[in-house]
Structure formats: structure tokens, C-alpha cells
Amino acid sequence: MEDVVILVGGKGSRLGNITKNTPKPFLEINKEPFLITLMNDIHRFGFKKFILLAGHANQILIEYFKKNKFNYTVEVIVENEPLGTGGAIINALPKISENFFCFNGDSFLKGNWLKIKNLLSDNVDAAVALSYVNDPSRYGNVILDSKGFIQNFSEKSGKNNLVNAGVYFFKKKLFENYKNKYISLENEIFPTLVLKKNICGREIRGNFIDIGLPESLNLARKSNIFHNKYAVVLDRDGTINVDNGYTYKVSDLRFNPFIKKFISYLNDRNILTVVATNQSGIAREIFSEDDMHLFHHEIQRRLHTEDAHIDGFFYCPFHKDATNNIYKINSNLRKPNIGMLELIKEKWNLEKDNMLMIGDKDSDIDCATNFKIESLKYKNSMSLDFLVNFVEDKFNLN
Image 1: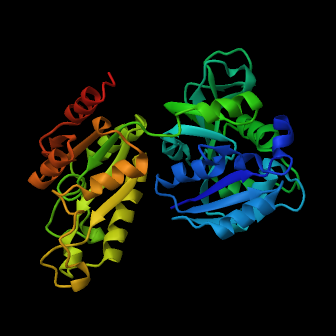
Image 2: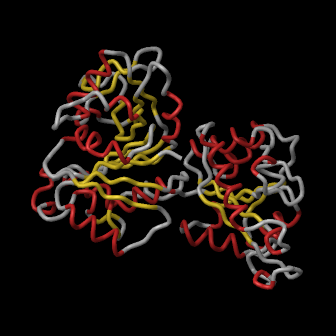
Image 3: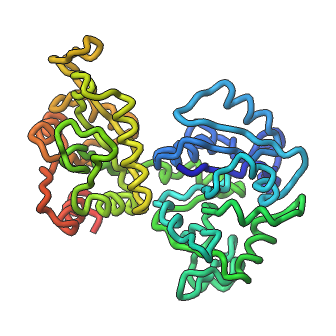
């Protein structure tokens, strides 16, 4: 999995005194630092390593991540003098993976930005997520040619209302030839890539917000774009992948027809896509929890090649007939009991009317019935169109 780099070094001078002693990305949104909201949203795509490129008031970041632990690793790299957005990346190159995602630390794109990953090619070293906004004058239009290459970053005419959403996918090598100590992505590197026809962009469906001005910060604090309204809960074996009976070996992973495209569709519509799976093979000592996690990692890795991801994996390793006494529990997590659905609802603060369960077994359907949410019994004969239409009708998305 690629590294995620976040640019958090700016002073936020346009916000006045509130950023005098606080990094702009650490301003509070939804009762937590904006940066944490951003990182948690990125983490649900499956990313587990974050590199923060810090400058102004960096000690606050360092102390925060010493005191607070997350389900991902965080490394803070401090620039000893202002280096610009490009210079900060160059300064951190020895720690960064060969290809990497990069985010502005003061903006948030609620959408399936994984779709820019596949824009890279032998002739393209950088990709930019673009967002539609009603008034692009503050940001400047991004103009694309017919093949998706970026022609201009600063067009003010409002031809297409597409703006730079602050999410990038880079090849590490594109930064290796720059020797300048201070260099800007926006003012120096991007214009060079445009001239070389070496940078592409793609519009990402979803909502975009930033906290760069007092009015946009206030808007962000009132916004509900940070939360997913709808969720589809998928069974794993028999629904996502072919069920071979205690399927756990990575070599045995085969996806059911259309399921990767269906998950990509859910991601594009900003519908949470969560797995709830019974895994009694752990209790019966057929495989371990580590084996299962490797299998889930491989599901996520292969989904990424299709611009798709799972937002969370929930599982029950317990069974009343376990051969390992640690797992010999009649657990409320095991479907058709509702424990996993309760956890999913609580984690994302969902309404039951906005949840849908899809699975191939009676226990999946009974679980949904017991929890009082709608369900669909999955069959391999179902078409992608059928699944999409069912979801759109359920959530009134037409």
C-alpha cells in the first residue's frame, strides 16, 4: 500500500490570530482537529502509513501524536526553514514510497479519489483530483484537454467549474531532479509538468471544502460533508468472494461476478461499504486471525486496482463449538445476531433506515431482520445493473 503524505506546514496567515500558535490543519472541526477528521477518512480507504510534512507550530503535532494512538502509523517530518510545498516533499523523499498520495492539509474531498491513481503511466508522473464548485473564481479553473491532460491551473473564466481539490498521486521520481531548496508545487512544479504534458486530472464526484479563509472555516464547521449518510453491509464469503469453505488463503481469493465494479459504484456514490463476516474457522483452529487479516488486506489491495475499497471489516471469530477455548463463546457478534451491525451503526452514527445488508446466506438476512434493516439475498446470477438499481431505489438516489 502506498504512503500518504499530508502537507501541514503552512502558517494559515489569512485566518489571522487563530493560527498564530496553532497549525491550520489543527483547527477544531466536529470536536476534533481538522487533520484527524481528514486522516480518519483517508484511513477507511485502507491506508495505514501517514507522513506529515510540518513547519509552523510543529511541536503541537509532534506532542499530539506522541500522546494519541490510532490504527495507523504517523511520522512527522519537520522542515527547519520554509521550503514550500514542493520543497517539503523533496526534503522527505527518503521516507516516501515510490508512488504516493499527497493531500493538502487544509482541504477535504468527500469522494472516491482513488480514481486518480490509474491516471499514472509511462508518460504521466502526476495526477490531480478535481472537484466541481459553483464559484471557481477563488481557486481558478483547471482546464483539461480531450485526453485528460491538464492545460491550465489558473484559468479564471469559469469554463467548467473544476478546481484543484488538493489530492494528488505522484511518482516519487518526478521530484528527484529538483535541486532548489524552496520550491512550490502550484507555482513551479505543476506549470513545468503542464508544459511537458506530464500531469493529468480527473473530476471526482463528491463534495469539496477547505478551511483557508475565515468564512470557509465557519462553513466547514457547519457542514455535514464529513459523514457518510448511507451504508451497505456486505457478507464476505459467498458474496464478495467465492466461498470454498473456510476460505482464508490469499491464493484462493476469487471475486464473484461484478462485485468489484459494484463496490466501486458504492464508493463513487459515497456509500459506506462495510464487511460483516462470520469466521468460525478461527475458533476451530483451521486458520488464525492473522491469516484472516492477510486475506482482508489482499481483498483491499485488489480492489484498489479497480478504484474501489472497503471502508471497514467487522468479523466474529467466536463459536460455541470452538476447539480453542479462547473463542468458545456464544457471541452476539455472530450472525444472525446483531452485534456487528450495532458496531457499524455506532461507529458511523448511522440511521437504520439508511443501512442495507447484502449477503448470500439465511443468517445474513435473519441478521438484518433482527436488526430491523432492509436486506437483499445475493445470488451470482444478479447483474451489476440489478444491484445498482436496488441500491438507488433503496436510498432514493435516482
